[in-house]
Amino acid sequence: MADGRFMPGLVLAERFYREAVEPLVRKHFGEVPHSAARLGAGSEVLGFDTERSADHEWGPRLQLFLDPDDTRADDIGAALAEHLPKVFLGFPTHFVGTEDEGVGRMALTDGPVRHRVDVTDAATWFDRRLGFDPRGGVTVRDWLGAPTQRLAETTAGAVFHDGLGVLTPAREALRWYPDDVWRHVLACQWARIAEGEAFVGRCGEVGDELGSAVVAARLTRDLMRLRLLLDRRYPPYDKWLGSAFARYADLVPVLRAAVAATDWRAREDHLAVAYERIAERCNDLGLADPVDPTTRPYHDRPFRVLRADRFTTALRAAITDPEVACLPLLGAVDQCADSTAVLEHPARSRKLVD
Image (tube, rainbow, N blue to C red; front, side, top):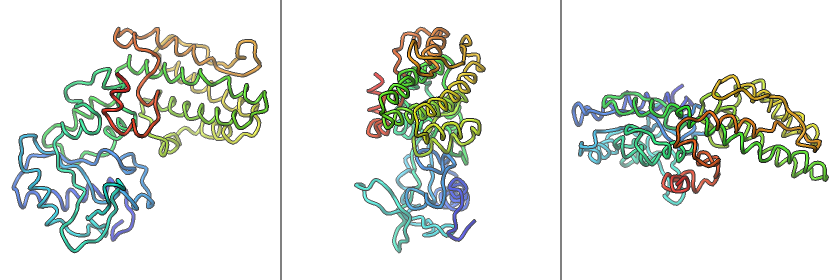
């Protein structure tokens, strides 16, 4: 669509680059070696944007990567501000918003355009988003210190031109965890489930249906993230977790029933179905010796559980990298912390992992 009607943000970004940004740069600076993409934060990068998304941090925007020795970044940014069209395909190219608000919104302007073309170099951009440059190799610390939301934002989106050859190898390096890091992350996710799976029944047994429901909701979130990890998909943060999970038609109604149940026994039964299906998928990967995927009582208590710790043990036993094998069962940063104030700041995430 055009004339201000909604279109997927990645489509808009590519057209903005090809029809406005690149021709303008070439006109004023000649053939500038560069790469261009739409990566990073924003619902459109993950393909989840809708008309609602256009109210903030959405619009004609992209990253323009220059060689780090190219000193024209500021000049190119200024030329774009001066010469970009005020409106592109019906969408303002000018963004307003204060630093305190932390967001930008499209708005019309009569003056220079405060555009959202981030003119930078790859090393600076990757360090700002991840805390490291993947082109130099990705260490175990790098993997565990990067929230899956940030890894998803970096490997999704779209590359429109990679004239510098900097984006393709970086994104390929981050495509997925090495097998032993994957085993470790999966083991830690099963460990999270093992911590709470008996509490759905224990809370319910003492008449605490609200507490039982809260535990079930946490377990549901952990199961959703686990299922995505098993398919080599980085789980996005909570706003988009359900959207990313929607493809699992065998599990969505089961988990919806679990969180909607008003009786702990029904809640427990629905979770048990999800446990067994996800456990079978884990076995199918062949990352560790298979584990019996059927649910069972919790020791001598009448609560139906998987005993998810059995999967943790099996996965840990299959790790051969000594650096990974000696790690504590904390996992990646977003498996042991869910504070936005930590996860949105690479320095804090990496310090926590350290």
